[in-house]
Image (cartoon, rainbow, N blue to C red; front, side, top):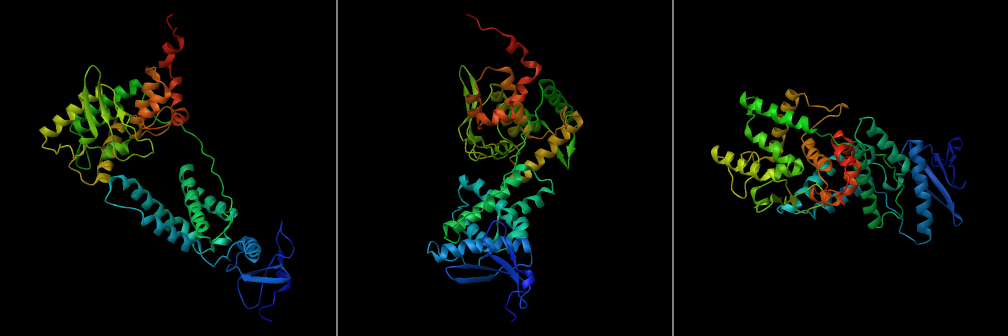
Length: 400
């Protein structure tokens, strides 16, 4: 009979009863699975020619059969990973309101997640039946991504997305159990920053390039870039906040203590408390306003603080990066002594490291002001405190 098992293909599965087997039949190119329970046979095609995948499918089939025959859950339909993933994405999309500023980050995150599904996850897991996907399949997928030398955080993002799809299926009562997921070992690398001497050299080279009227892709390197560098170091802001920063986000305080109180609307993290600047930021901000006035640039409360004429803020950030990279190259500061690459974010890292070295501010206060956590400071920044600049603090004695 064309539907009878081919005897030499019948295979049991380690760790499961012998009544669970996979096999092939003359009528199909796919592996089939069969289990015996409650005095009857249950049989189904695995829809795969891969023996390893077939075993994974059979295990899920066995577990779901036991559950369904005991009326614990309805029998799982033959739904692919891509089907349920698209349903998950549609559900997320329906909750996004693009006309609210607070949703900018959500929208950006949605697009990034969607691209990961389309470009990476669907080609590998998309047509697999959801219930056939087990830990080894997800690990195999991550191993493939690892060959592209993606960062540990990026690999983790992929795992999180796949897990969200399974959780969505579980909420919809399509599966009872979520398979165990692989974990990614993250190696913490201290953030690249500028020493005090390097920071001074960076400013010196910036001024020299301004005098030479240096340009990158037709964009003149002028005082605005100098202001951006010093403003960033004196405000602890992320470059993503700098990109979207508007004048209405800044409150100038010139009492006994000078400072800017900055409240960006969109932040990378959940820490959204206002940022208090160093006193130098007040004069730098005044210089920025005067610069825009003298260059007939927009400078009302709803205009961007940096490069306000560029409405496309992604392009604005790309322009800033290119100009900053030019400064780094000329200053020979593109990498630190360990060979680690410096970027625009090194300005924020420097502002935090300077406070750790030169001040007695407690970690909690600094973390809150930098819109991060004490854990992040300890993981990524405290290496700066081992600098020779801390000798005085280490050797100091408290006055009685």
